[in-house]
Image (cartoon, rainbow, N blue to C red; front, side, top):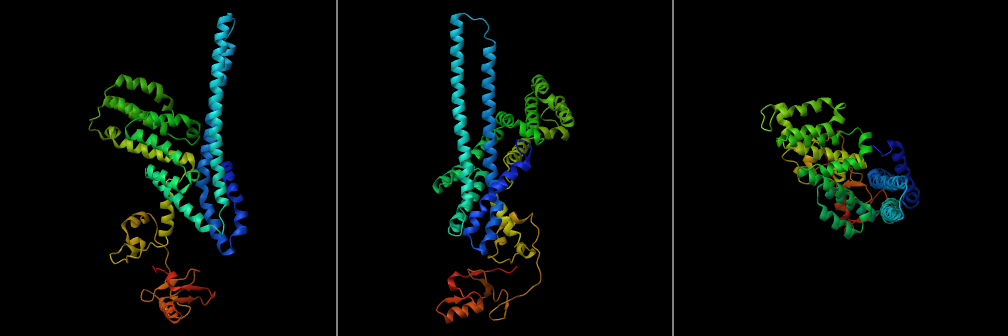
Length: 415
């Protein structure tokens, strides 16, 4: 997940980590000490938030550099091949060069705008991290929640909804809609059994895929070969293999030999070894492989951020009791969707301890459940209800002397 353009993941990650760290001094001055640790830990989770636009920025620079080198090389080659020309031919030759240079100028201008846009996006995200403070922590967390939801929508292919949410919340620079649309084009093509867009994507990212030792392009070539055999175009398949598969043969000889043997079979073969190669599920495998390569290329997590955050919370709640029929409805794991999400998680480590109310010294259990005040302190339901009755619905924390309304307390669950 840490592959980079220059093959030096430490340099890239150090750059992003230091960029995140620069946002902390301004935060420290504004956030009370009680919230500083929580905020600092929260910022550590924003690696992907900075990494994705940073990788996109580098990709844009590389693409512009290649385009300029190609055009300059063509112009220089044309100049060297001009030789002795008549006056009319020289004028035509110069006009052609001028036209080509004008085209190069337009490409440079377009490339400069694209680079500037990506740089602005990186800066917007750094500014967003630096803006976190005690005075706007609620608003900042709300924006982060929207970013997490947008990430989930884009991964689940709800592109229109995600775009509308980003526009209405004015957070276009804080989300990666453009990058996910790039993935959508490839995914749609693979879903329609077309490999051309995927091969073009591999060509655009050839150096990075090579450094990560990816075999995705090879798998795409194998699938094209299989489709030619499926359509009984054996001669074309042989020609195709000589041109596109032979360069990979030394590295993946076993796969190459197995696929080449399909020339002796048909797509209706009963031999399981080769029948699986003609299975339509091979396209699903290619789509899954592309997702992994795409996320690895941009430093994204394979799972949606929403799932990761939810699993972090569910890991503290999951117990064997959660999967029993009499699990209380207040427990999130009573819901089938949450149970499925928590399935790969281990059970939380539970100690046989007792919760005793600070006020009444009575045991807090299901009959006398604990309640949490806004300041984080926990007391029993009986104690707080009695205090509220005696003080017209208000509660005074005996530890901090903070005053709250009884409606502000929340129920804590004992697992």
